Length: 144
Image (cartoon, rainbow, N blue to C red; front, side, top):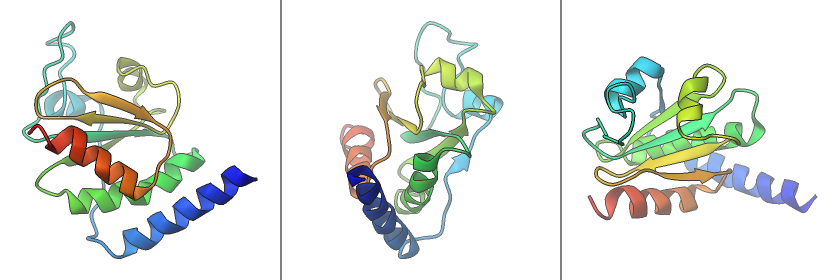
C-alpha cells in the first residue's frame, strides 16, 4: 500500500513537471541505429567504444511495464531539457532482446547512463525526475 502511494506521488509529480517543459521525446532505437549511434558491438566485441558525439541515456523499457510507463514522461521531459547536451534514447526490450542482453538487463526499467568518455553506468527501477536529472548531470555532464 505504501509503495502504491509513493508511486502515485512520483507519477503525479513527473506528469506535472512534464507538462511544463519542452515537448520532445526520447528517441527509440533499433539494433542498427544503436550500432551507429552508441556502440558497434560487432566491430568492437571485447571493448566498449562509444560512437556518440555527446553523452547519452538509454531507457530499456517494455510497453506492458507499469513503472516504464511512469518513466516515459520523465524521459521525454529530460530529452527536452538536455537537448543539445545529452541524447535520450529508449529501447524496447521485447523488440531488441540482443541489446537488452548486451547490457545484462534483467528488470525494467533499466537506464544506461553513458558519459562521453569512460564506461556506462547502469541503474534499475523507476525514480523521480529530480533524481534522474541529478544522475544525468553527475554521470554524463560533470566529467565531459
